[in-house]
Length: 320
Image: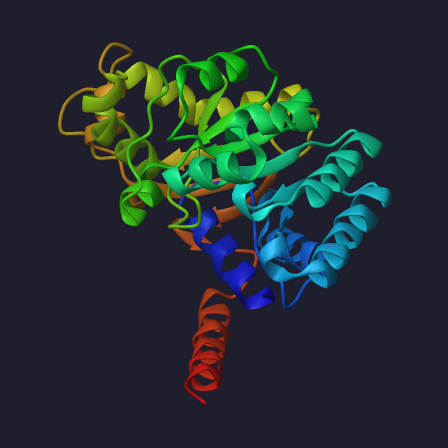
């Protein structure tokens, strides 16, 4: 887990990402997982708001350990969210306990929501309501720190519920394309939409471009709207008082523009010209972590050598 987090944090830094809102699943390595991930990101110099995914599909012992792991971190004053997998894998008891934990520490929940139609179908079959209705009844939407991830298969009533709540929605276009579950539409929702990658990669420039090009047909979102969604993660973090994402973060781009860059055409350059290879230097929380495209805080070659060796060991274990 530590190697995976280090490799991800390293790629984030190289891609110009200074803060990550993470959601991980490790049902067989729960204890200490949140601190291990946070420590790896801290070593590289990238801020992180972690959470551990809870689900009844992993059994009651894993749920109990996961709630304890999350509670211990929150009790120690270290920020995290209460993580849940999709509604159809989370029973009423686990959902209730997760919301109670979030209330106890004034946190929020980070939960998959209507990524696939099966989430809606199974939730309705088991609980007699749709996903967002169930979350509203349980109190998931009471928090401005709550993030509903995906939100593809929502009807008009669910969109209205979210529009009237303080919760946020995270769009993950490339993951949705990869899983062939549909395309995100922001119509009927509030402006509380931000962009993510769902672990597909660490390049938010690429994520924004995919959101725009894949969203042209289903929702007609223009360049300005998608760029705003990219920037709204800053609004989420500032609104909820999470430290590590302020004015002392800076990304310097070395972009040999083929035409002049102006205020009027900036978005055109952003979506059609820029990519992660143009990230030259990165300052995170006032600390220079990337200079001249080289990560300064850790030895890149050493980290990648360790992750490759770890991957080989994992593949060998899986083959046994």
